[in-house]
Amino acid sequence: MVSMKYYIVTIAALFVALGTGILIGVNLNESDFYLRQQQLLLEGIETKFNELQVERESYMTEIDGLIREKEKNSAFIDNLYKEIIKQRLVGYNIAIIKTTDIFYYDDVPILLEEAGANIAIEITYKDRIFNYSEEEKLELYEIFNIYDYNELIAAINDQVVNFLTFGKESEFLTYLIENQWIGYTGNKAILEDSPIHYVVIAGGSLSKEAKTVEEIDLDIINKCKKNVIPVVGIERIDAGYSYIPYYKKEKISTVDNINTIMGKVSLVYIITGINGHFGEGEYSENLIPSLIEY
Image (tube, rainbow, N blue to C red; front, top):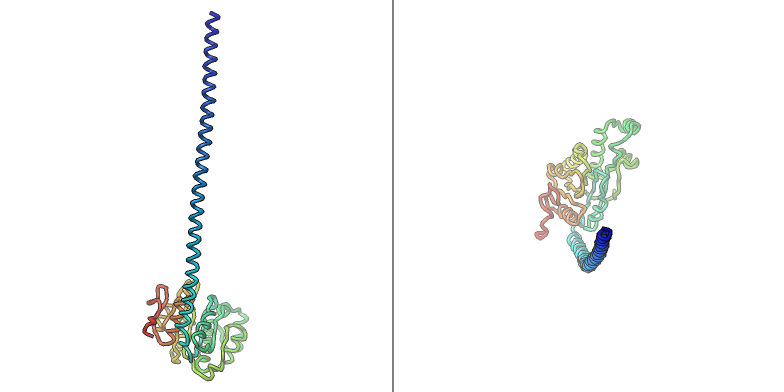
């Protein structure tokens, strides 16, 4: 009986030892398997990384080529642009009126001078006109008998257009310039000796301000037309609220992308006699004037 128990215990011990050996063996095999799998995964990642490096270098070479090509194209377009506008506006006296000071239009006089024009005057309607204090309102009333906003705007428009037409600077206009209600640069001698051949009115807004358009831009346009001074309306392509539809209703030519080379060419050709609405916005009718005919 004792010997039978001994055999049973011995056999059980053998099975336990065998099971333990099998378990250890399996774990070792699985460990080797996992290590091998990790090694293969790392090798795959390294291979893919090397492929991506080669692909990146290929793209960088292609990008460098495109950059060089873009620089050559830009140089060609710039030279062509200068040839297109060269001497087109010789003998023209131009006035620029900026009805807003929130957009950059300082490149417009540079453009026109490159085309040969004389910039007789630049006038900018400052933001102060729309945000003056009660003290300033009282001062305007005491000096010029002007009390409210509408009277002020109408008076400024009158004086500006009269200055363009006759070359005479009024006391009121001098006051506005000296007190920085409006910005002014120019050559008064040109106005006194020769007429203005064209007025460039630069507008546009960040948001809807139709009242400002009607009271300033459209009033100036109509006053210029009464004095037989042609007007062209321009704005930047990034203007949030376009004045172009208002300008179009006044039957004047327009450019809505004056901050581009195409817009600059359009402006020069409009002044030389081409009519139309040029640019890239929803109110334009042609991208650029047909230069072949001119």
